[in-house]
Image (cartoon, rainbow, N blue to C red):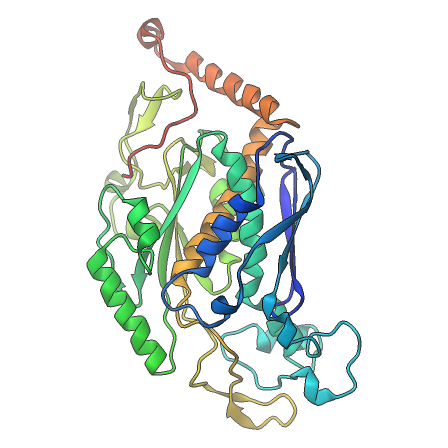
Amino acid sequence: MFRYFTAGESHGKGGVAIVEGIPAGVPISEEYIEKHMRRRQQGYGRGPRQQLEVDRAEILSGVRHGLTMGSPISMWVENKDFVNWTEAMSVAPVDDEAKTRRVTRLRPGHADFPGVFKYSQHDVRPILERSSARETAARVAAGAVARRFLEEFGIEIHSHVLTIATIKAKVPDQIDWEAVEQSPVRCADPEAAKAMMAHVDWCRDNGNTAGGVFEVIATGVPVGLGSHTQWDLKLDGLIAQGMMSIQAVKGVEIGTGFANTELLGSQVHDIIEPWTGDARPFHHVTNRAGGIEGGMSNGEPVVARMALKPISTLSKPLPSVDLDTGDVVQAHYERSDICQVPPACVIGEAVMATVLAKCFLEKFGGDHLEETRRNLRGFLEGLNTFRPKQAMAAGSRLAPNPESERR
């Protein structure tokens, strides 16, 4: 069973990621993981923290001579900034309260308000440290391991920004992913990207923050991941849960979910036709369903869009209350980003990778990579039994679903 955990605080010694369930024999390196962690640190609107950290995951276990061993993979992500927080985040008691950097002013929109009551804390510090988006550094490390596994089967994951505030990108039919990687806001529309950066600048100058919508697309996903048989096995439900767990994400849609509500059924559902492009005997002409029907992947690209609210920490804080006095005060401010939509794309990719890896291994299993390959191959060959006899006579290519054009 594939699963992962993270641990660590924003200003603590570092973060930990533990990944279980990856078969033996998968090639992986610290350099590969670091590449994706660096992508998470980029993006227009990031704060000064990213200039202090050079994120790298040190693999502590589960990998030998460049290959996974089938045992749990543990990784350590050091916080360089901890040198400035040794007393405030000390494991041992600290006698001088002034050195603990205690926080009593609640931030609207953050985990502060419910967290102090749930955990009976008279200091917001323990809540904000763990609820911080710094946790996603370890999560991206875990996602990179899952992603590397999926790449062995031709599954690729990309992401881009659709909107920041009211600025909407015009998305081409064919996205140039290399250009997206070079864009400061991960936007496929250069003109919209300029307007997005100008809005982020305005927010910075006015002590405000910006949100937006980003899209994650997985191609090469075979038909049959997930299940319709139970609520907690549905692929779209698992993706939605994973994406909603990203800090500040407040909405998720699969495919063109929200736009579909304004259309007739005849305009929404994807027509099915015979197909010889991969192992499937049939495919969909369009992909409004986002690659998922009935909680299962259908072989089309899996598409999810996420709404990210503006960051809660404002340099011009909103009114709030003080835990100690109950007085109305300005909310606490701690160094923060202005806009997290571009880096949220990379975090969303990591979440997509972990969900797909989990469902892929539930479907195909295998304690070694080659065993998983054999299981997938047998499944794809079995799809031939659904192929019309004339197509069988002509022969068909049996291989994992190649990257489809974006519909």
